Structures are given as structure tokens and as C-alpha cells.
Length: 445
Image 1 (cartoon, rainbow, N blue to C red):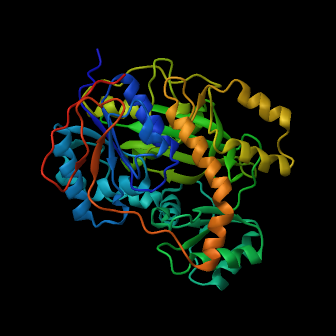
Image 2 (cartoon, rainbow, N blue to C red; image 1 turned 180 degrees about the vertical axis):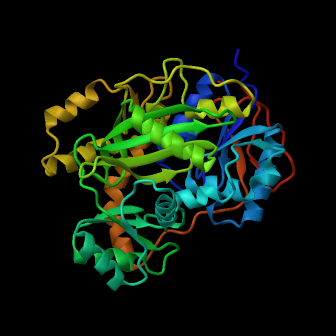
């Protein structure tokens, strides 16, 4: 029988209220009966209203120095009252724990990759350099120090080229981490946008896309030798098209690709949850590594086995000293992000790559959705409201940007722990910097 008494904390640095991967993790662990706490930007973030959330941790640690983040996590541990599993949901969190987490290990259970490895893997140009050293197939790339060098690279490889922020966890709010650059004017615009920010622009060779050529791998590398689960799938649609997050994907076993990726993970000595993006290059038949995310992937619930095993549950079981058991998902399981896939489908339709009937057929029998769940409806409703407001307010935001006025920066103070719907009984709001306040734990419904 599985022991679910150890709480779990989802650590998020990126201020993104629409992050559906965190919601998937809350639901996955909450349905097991695990008391789940999650770092959230605001109480009315969609994921913060999940019935499976035991406690909201209202905190934005992204702009705080390491010592304050460590102090905040220690205070959070005191409020929870026991050792907890700690799972990062973004690159910044994974990097922070790898580089600064040693003094937290008496309070939290989390993966232990080599200290500098997550930063190297999450960095777009440092990943390219690592691939070159290890002989891993990857696109040609350049980290230009001038617009002239950038233009030379584009001229050599031809437009379009891919523009990526070299360290995307340092991106400014609203700044796109990846874009397809179609011409010299687009290159100049991307170059100007990257100047003065916290990260540089990297250019990457564009590998022509064809149906079924975009693949991803999700896995968990724990204390045992084997990576389990270790799953491959096809990204049918992304938003933005061919250069963004997965909006519709399918589980497609690929033994050769799985062996290629697990071999790389073994060579690196990697530990923890992992999400990789690859594209098969029809010019030479190789699967080329585009991105290596050393953390939870937003579409991880695609790879859910018949008994409920996914990478988050695998991490929880392994970190609490329990065997990782359960079957991996079968071929054909599908996943859709309702907030993005209709817009993605429109882009593919304009390109002549998707018809209405084909889109309807793909979504008619989808197995897993990012937001909608019959047993947890509030996040879906809030997502719809937020997306509707985004459409309505976009002209106002653009006008504000033109006039130079902007919203006030969000608070990054100490974490506040609030009761969730799964842990309301007797719980009260607490501030990590204040004297201890009793938190009464309620059971998950």
C-alpha cells in the first residue's frame, strides 16, 4: 500500500498564472491523497483554486537573492510542520535547488543532479556546446555579439532561423523565449528586443518541419539505474506554430529515440524529472535535440499509465523511498491544451497544414486536457475568464506600452501560506516572516 503521508510542495519561480503543468501536478498527487502545497503568484490563479490543493503558498521568489529564497523555504517548512517532497516546475527552480539546495535537505526531499548541470542544460547555447562535445545531434547555433554576426549566420544557413533567449529563465515579463525569424527585418527587430535585457539572443538553424517530425521525451531518473517512466510522443501542434509549447500531442512509443535519450541521461548522471524536445531532420534522418528542460514538462499528463503512474508520481514515490511501480501509457493517448490549441489550429490552417475536419477529428476523443476535469472544475472556469479578459484587454495593454505606462511590479516578499480547498479545516493565512501560526491539516476530498 502506498504511503501518502509526506506532503509535497510545487516550487515555481516563473510568474505565469497560466502554467497548466503545475495544475496537472496538483491533481496527480492530490488524487493519490498526498497533501499538496503550491507556490502561486496570487490566490486567484487558476491552479490555486484546485480542489486538490491543500495549501496555497503566495510568493514570487524569482527576483529575490538566494539567501532570502532559502530563508523563505525554511519558514515554509516550519509552517508545514514536516519533511516534504519538493518538485520544481520551471528552469529557475531546478537551477536554484541544484546550486543552493544542500542546506534544505534536512527539510525537503528533492532530486540531486550534479550541481551545475541543470543550468548548463536549460541554457540554450550552453546546451548546444554540450551537444557538440558529446556528439549529440543538434541544430547549428550561434550566440552573436553583434547584429552583423547575426546576419552572417542567417545568411549562411538561410531564412527562416530560430531566435531563442539564451537563458530564458531571465526573460522579462511577456518576452517570448522562442520565435521563428523570417527575414532581415525580423532579425533586426529580434536583436533590438534582446538588447538591454537579462539574456542574450541565440540563433539556431531552422530544421524544416514535416508531419510527425516533432518529438518529445518525458522521464524520471531516480535512485535506481533505470529511467522510469521513460516515454516518447509526437507534438502534432504547438503555439506558436512550429516554435512554441505543445498544444496537442500524442503518446507514440519510439524505442530507438528512447534508447538515444536514456543513454544521454546516463552519460550525464542526470537525476530528476526531465522534458526534452527533438525534431527528426528528414535531410539526414537524425533526431536533433532542440531543448533540454531539467524539470517538469507542462504536458507531462499525456504520459499517464493505466494505473496513474506519471513522472510526478514516480518522483514522489522514489523520493519517499517507495518502489516506482505501474505500467507506462499505451500508444495513441492524446493531450490537448484548451487555452491554446484553437489558436494554434488557426495558424496551421492559414499555412494550409490543417483542415477543420482534421482538427475536429483530433480533439473529439482526446484523453487528457490541460484544464478541464470533471472532478475539479474551478481551474477551468478561471482559465476561461482569464483568457477572455486577455482578448478584451490586449488593445489596452498595447496602448499602455505605447504611452510608456505600466503596471506596478508584483510583490516578492516572504511566502504566505493559505489553506486550499483540500485543507480548509481550521487553517489560517500565515506569513512566513511572522511568528508561527498553527496550520490545521484537512483531508483531500
